[in-house]
Image (cartoon, rainbow, N blue to C red):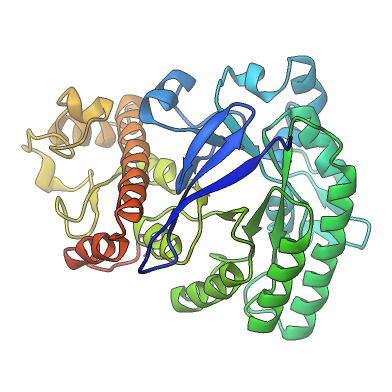
Amino acid sequence: MAAITYELVHKDKFSDARAGILHTPHGDFLTPIFMPVGTQASVKSVSPDELEELGAGIILGNTYHLFLRPGADLIQKAGGLHKFMNWRRGILTDSGGFQVFSLGELRKITEDGVTFRSHIDGASKFLSPEISIETQIKLGSDIMMAFDECIPYGVDYDYAKKSTERTHRWAERSLNAATSENQGLFGICQGGMFANLREESAKVIGSMDFAGCAIGGLSVGEPRAEMYEMLKISAKFLPENKARYFMGLGTPNDLLESVKLGVDMFDCVFPTRVARNGMAMVSPKTSASGRLVMKNACYIEDFTPLENECDCYACRNNFTRAYIRHLVRAEEIFGLRLLTLHNLRYLQKFMAEMRNAILADNFNEFRAEYFSSYERKNFNE
């Protein structure tokens, strides 16, 4: 039996939104799902027990960073990533491709793979489909990702076509290297901002023997309307019996729109990163912008919790906005931890609410209600 399978439970009657179950060696997880990012085998400032309490099911480890430090061999000796970081539930490892390609002039792409310079010490390193998969096997994640080339925004058609075709060849090599029976492998479709390439890549990757399909090369600087259009095309041509994963997306409005188009899985550093910058994610019913900027002076004497109906550690213990603002302004780590716990819990609840709306065939109503009190201002602005 395959290590990773996807079970489609229900599709909303009035949209493409899906509710499913992702079966893995470390548990079954309800979709749509948001996966916190643990770049270096740790979700920043949060313990594994706290992550479980927050409702996290699958977290991410970053192959590029773990490949460089402490090294996959050491993690394998420790018993794999689960034991190394004391995490009992699911782990997905990315291929390292996005980080390598984001290095710009510090890397060189050939058909064999990518030569790059470490951002840590400048040493020359090499990653290929085979090395990426070998590294992920040593890490022991539940879900591995095929090695691909993330196409930058703004490239011409010829570049996007050649790059997408190379991603398809690398996908085949990744499959051939994936010999572990206890791990599943997801392919990644690309295509840049070109509709015919998106359709072709979704069909090619979807037809291969992958456990799931990721949609890559989006949310890389393109306008939101263009991102959604390319996502819609990719999702349309992916198989219904495999999980669909949008890599690197994590704002509530983007999650809503992408779930509507049929995506099941998401990850992003957004909730933890903005927490470290002093921002709380909240319902638009609490704040029309969907956020509380805790450095603002309006919270100096605000003795209410971040969100009245929230059950996260910070809110249920009534750590007030005034107190958290004080901690943030004083650069106390505890304040950033409280915001991180809150933001991660907010997204876990948000995904559960979307799933319930899908099961009740009222996802469009849920979405409309959310946006009716929301400023529709991009979180990244």
